[in-house]
Length: 192
Image (tube, rainbow, N blue to C red; front, side, top):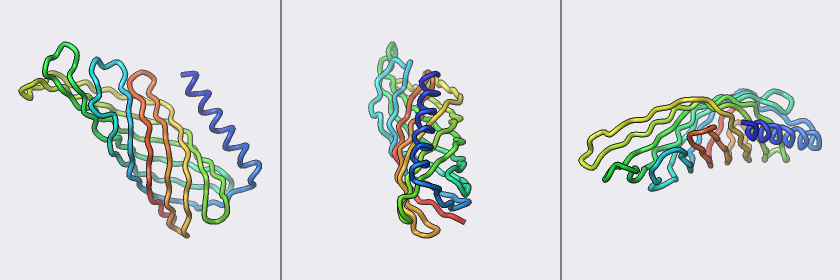
């Protein structure tokens, strides 16, 4: 847990330091958006191999930028489905892992001219995960479901075209003991 706190402090420090050098950023106000995402995952404490640790996901978000450098953002993230190979002790078994959740974050931004904005975020992720295990003929061996909350952080680059912005970003979701996700997203944001 200490490494999460150290990472969050470093991200906030870098954002504040960059802003101090760049000056105040103009706010866009209330916004809503969505993104197509490419996710990778590392599932811990499961005695099986991931057949593919990459999946397609998506996310939706709503936020507000205050007149200074900060903002707030809430969102929903779906990491997609991951196929899991044979489980230790269950011949011919296979499974599927899925996780999703809600986010709440503090954001910071630095405009680089009128067109480009660099931003970062740090917050909390309230997640649900599910692992379904099936045997060879399709019978259900078991289902494992868990939920929890953990910190996350990310950074991105936004191209501003009036009320519409195109963004690319990276986010890291670290569960303390269950899984880790890296999320690369390409999205669109609309400002009111």
